[in-house]
Image: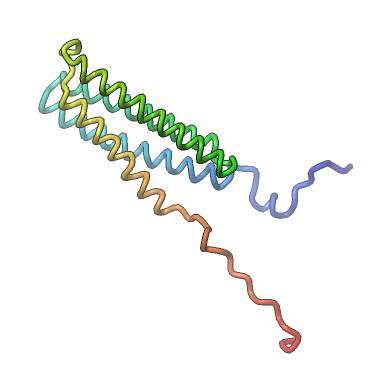
Length: 166
């Protein structure tokens, strides 16, 4: 019995798991989450101690907003990791622009309506937002710098023996 698509030896050697692009995007997502959550925990501790419940609640809200937007954006990158480079670039730019604009609008809305939210601490909100973004990006950059992208690291292939070597 023949099939339309029989796996080659290269296909069977690699396996049926996710592509290297998806694996790399997942590593960036996990690394970013580790950095963002670490920064969030530090902010929760600091503002929980310095401003008690008010600071803790505010830091929690700010961290949740930032982590949601960054995780959603990186998840989009995981979903589109195997697409063509042009499509991935467009998706990346649209996703990033959308996240920055929406996050900026939320922060601007809070800044303009602070008096309506007396139970929130402006200092805790903005410091936590910046810290979580910085934590996410710092670890994501670290993870990216450790990814093995084979642009220059090609497999060694011995030269073909010439007629004189035989």
